[in-house]
Image 1: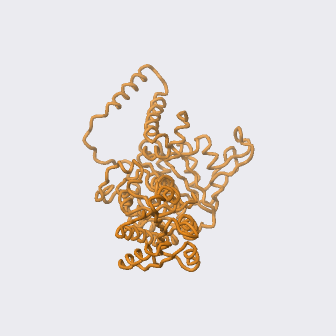
Image 2: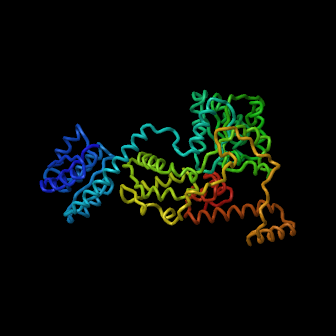
Amino acid sequence: MKPIWVVDDDQSIRFVLEKALQREGFSVRCFASPREVLEALEDDAPQVLVSDIRMPGGSGIDLLGAVKQRHPGLPVIIMTAYSDLDSAVSAFQGGAFEYLPKPFDVVKAVELIRRAVEESLREDVADAAQAQMPEMLGQAPAMQDVFRAIGRLSQSNVTVMITGESGTGKELVARALHKHSPRAQGPFVAINTAAIPKDLLESELFGHERGAFTGAQTTRRGRFEQADGGTLFLDEIGDMPFDLQTRLLRVLSDGQFYRVGGHQPLKANVRVIAATHQNLEERVRQGHFREDLYHRLNVIRLRLPPLRERREDIPMLTRFFLGKSAKELGVEAKRITDSALARLATFDFPGNVRQLENLCHWLTVMAPAQVVEPKDLPPELLGAPAAPQAAPAEPPGAADAAATTATPPPPLGTEAAPAAPAAPPDWLADLARDARRRLESGETEVWDTLTRQFESGLIHAALELTRGRRIEAAQRLGIGRNTITRKIQELGLED
């Protein structure tokens, strides 16, 4: 471990801190002025810097700025007299680890420095790990299964279906499969079928000829042509319109397709990876998804676990996202205490890894100090009940629990044993009465009318709860962020 540096023009302060720290087993180096510290930084760096705020030849605040430019992650403790406290707090709030008011209790001062050392050592380990950061993170057994599956599947051209809740990182897995495949030199093209209006999706996928429809002033290559020789990632495949599913099935079957308005068959050498957060078997049973397309896509199924099934990965992911967010915003990365991490690990994160990343971005902007304590976490986490650690999210042997083998789909004709019937909620009875009244009156488009009302009510409730934050509303509803955007547009809820 590197020594602790103490800089103060008062020799008695240096002496007291040096002896107290040496008794605790720390190596200490003392300086009388900021200039001496800056000269020493040319060849060395401390584990922690403790500096007075007012010294001849320079201030601790100026020294803090100079040190942070060279060593952004170095914890700096500023010693201040009570008369300096307000200016010091406002001046170094964005950079110093903590302040130490004078006169100070030596025991408390040593304890503060010890905390800074522990934080510094933890950050050293995190920095070393981040230097070798893989494209995906996870030490939990469920994620190790995913990594092993990626290794086996990457050398194959077989179609892969990635399932998992929204925010679990399905596109990251698709990119990893492409990156480690023989097609890595080819393009990786991604399209979210839920984010594109139905009328435009066919053109997006297959392209169009000039004059094929109003506004088609030039010939346009579709995503299949763009992905030739590489990988095409079809996200939210469960939301694809039924009539387009037929065209997709034909492409997957014989590799040929036509541009919209075209008469010349085209071929594209494309590996297809699909993803969905929906239960496709249920979509097939409901008649919303073609069974033959389901079987064509569901050759190998790879299930991504939700974050609540891999809580042991939360500390690593949190530190990574805090560093990433700080880099994007051009600020110093926030540090987080073990107690705050422990509180995060009790939260279920319905939005999964995406929600954790958004939370870290919020902390980078909103947390008042450089070190995040439990009290700095957002209200929805502070008010959330602690989640039980031992209860599994689903019973052992559940479908897709092992991500390393080909998973045949369950027979579509089989169903689980029926549970004891429960009385329907009042709103269902009201819905049934309203539907019957409309049907008896001869009203048409009853399905569309009531569906729009139902979806509007759900989205209004979620947006009201999240104060208009669409991404969080989508996460709470269990739908994709692109899905909620499309629904808001379709339902006319923009205002």
